[in-house]
Length: 112
Length: 116
Image (cartoon, rainbow over all chains, first blue to last red; front, side, top):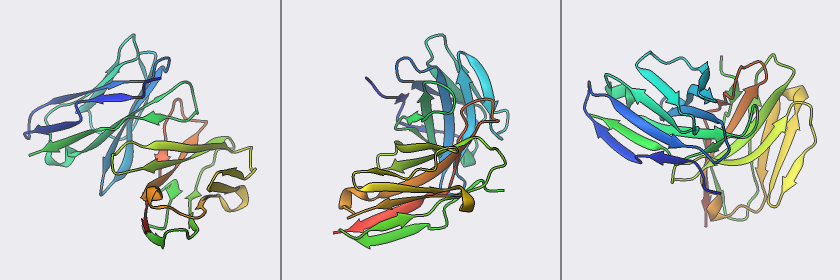
């Protein structure tokens, strides 16, 4: 079974631009979560989607948004990028509630 | 307030030594789930174990063992006879049943270095 796939692996963007990250979950998994990892703040929950509905959202500004498609693939978008958005963005998929999540290798975003 | 605390930021051990990684959690839920993940330099988080709040049995998987104690709100992880391949950052995480979805609260991680 293929694992969680995130694309692209690396991105360099300029302040003020917007970016879209993609995540393909494990086949059959309907829950997709996104996390931001930075040296200062650690791993922080962004949001979670299940069957195309956002079920939970972390404490991030509205510049961070996401969506999930009918095939469970998910995208997250960050608009008006700031230097502080530089981070590793991790996507995780789960088969159902309260079970283990399987993570992708992440997208490393650098904002210059 | 921090829901998951990993007080050990960095640990170094010599190969074949045993090492215990500490995790203390905080929740008001009676039903919750605890996890350990390993993050090697490649970046992805690798799932190691899941425990629910009603199962306090300790678990052993090869060189890995976990000690869950509700009385002290701890879920510690021991690696026996450590190997260089165990070098990574280890995260403890909590998921609460009152959440509407899958949301993990992660600790700040413990960076383990195993010296050959």
